[in-house]
Length: 107
Image 1 (cartoon, one colour):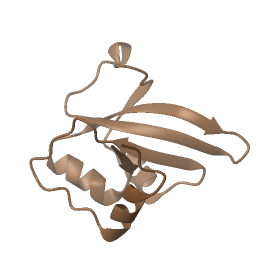
Image 2 (spheres, rainbow, N blue to C red):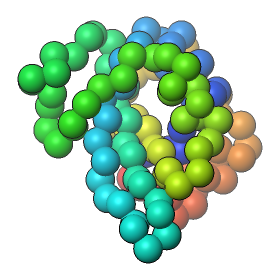
Image 3 (spheres, rainbow, N blue to C red):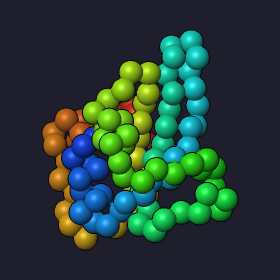
């Protein structure tokens, strides 16, 4: 399941021990100047030369990710939560629930 990156989601992931995010750029819509980025939370520091699957880089939770969560022009950023188990309950505001049901959320 993929949902849109928000500050609340980042906070929940941090509380559950996720401090790194694998990143892949799946497509770029050059006509509309939109870049699609998918982040996958991980708890352990990833090795750059051994990133799984189609992931090209990783981020440590930093100001940059907080800025991404605040919304940046020309980027569509989602978080892949498949296989993620939360020790603490994931609280999604009503807006995120609407987004989850929208065309941007994929199961």
